[in-house]
Image (cartoon, rainbow, N blue to C red):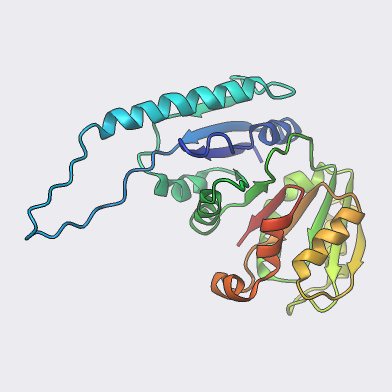
Length: 271
């Protein structure tokens, strides 16, 4: 995992998980690219018979002001990390993207995209889903104000699904660096596919020793996964995203939604 992407805009530069990216880059010998995306105004529909006129005069100046302030914020925050994240492994790219919707596309040529969860700015969820569904690569969601190291104790939320198999494969560079690996299974939370014992054998074939942690069935298996992970002192969770559809999870809830909203530790997702 050698290339880490940190997308940010004028309204999200405070939420970018720079410290977490610095810790992960040190662990996997990766480089970090913090990439700015401008958020242009949504198109305005004007009644052609009304005589109304929409003016975007001054928009370029506004975007340049956004860029300047956001870039300074990123560089200042990186310098204050412990240890500092310096220019030797952080590239701040202010020019490659012309629109925030391009974030999903640029994720395709990065090993990992990191997004900071924010209570104040719901736009992080749009960013997460764009990277997840358009990028085709894993997305790491970091809790707000997370500053510590992570990845020493890894939990794999194993429900036998295709999505979890995919994120597992994409996360192997991080899993290999862990001191402890747990396979977390929840009673009743399974799909057709290989069980935890088969996963344990697979990991052993990669010289990774994994232990089991099992949780009782629950109304929301995602909440139970977090409970089991916390009791095992897991500091990094591997989770397949949206085995159920997004619509189903929005209406009825689901494991992905619960973990996205409530996890106290970094979680890596793939779909």
